[in-house]
Image (tube, rainbow over all chains, first blue to last red; front, side, top):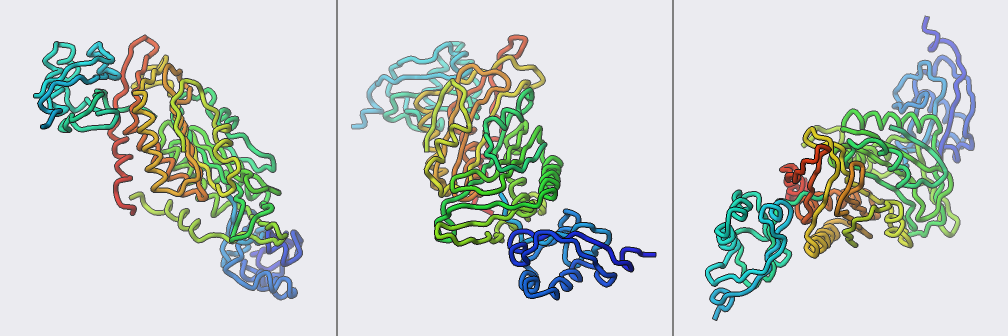
Length: 93
Length: 93
Length: 154
Length: 154
């Protein structure tokens, strides 16, 4: 019984910097279906939501992801992540 | 006519750190004869002045020299140097 | 070992005093301050806005500090990163490392900056004097700088 | 570019403020502070006396700064070295380097410290709590650290 891959679940999505500006969203709660298993699955689904999201995620190399506040790769499984964040490469310091 | 090598001349000698303590001298003016051409000549002459100087200069590797406030090697010619300083390897910073 | 994210300026002397008080085994303190420059890409800057990911920032910075403590001999360290609106000449980031010896202090300070630049979730938006806004691009040389710590020492 | 030899303590924040005021091309400030440690060779330290060679010290430090300016992109730099009687926890030396970029600031700061340690005519005498005096020996690792700048970059 792999509940995370067969059931829908609610996750919080967060967007920072120009991903926040392009999507027009800083934070939202969405319900993910069982077919969304990896970060890449989620990105593909987000791109289908409209032109703003399509544009924000158009260039895969410029989007970074964190699962529950930990850096992750696009191929990473979402598993039990509750908060998924999208942002450009960091530019602090 | 090489005046610096054939005439006597007065120079100031300075001693720092444990060279000052061992010789008991911080600064002195001495008259150098024409046979003292290099730093090493001067050290050899200083060592002949008494047990304090003999002890201070006993270990050649631990004595550094500056000619007119510029680092120099024992083989360096004194030439027209007016101030010759002896000190241990530096330990600042 | 501590990290802070704040809008307020910081005072280097006061931070160093707090880190070194009562620890006379510290012989070396290295610090780095990053500042807002007055121009970027040929345009004069009016302001810089620093955004971050609250929660993740602190976790990442603490993780970076732990890595530094594991690699280098450190008595104490501090990372302070400012967020919000800053002007040219303002300080952005402060890193302080305290060690018995200077090599560890210097290396840990550089390590912290290199990792911070490539891992800590901060983003800079520059506004030029003509009002145009521009998100700063990540620089490949920052990745290169961070990568050198993954290689065996020469 | 400036150097000072003094008995008085220094204030890092004030020194950095003086070096960076009105120059918004500075993006990076690296500093190093060397401090008197509380014990040496297993003995607890009561005090440390720093002797120097007035005149030569300033000349050497200025020469070291000129070399740093020739090697690295520096907007400003400062060396302050204290002399006289110091206690454990006291600051001994301050080096500050200001540059557009952090690599130059860090490297110049390390370069200045490495050269200062092997060329500037300062000598430390430690007095332990039992009253015994001891001139600090030069360390071979300081020569090694300075030598690395004579080699071609990797």
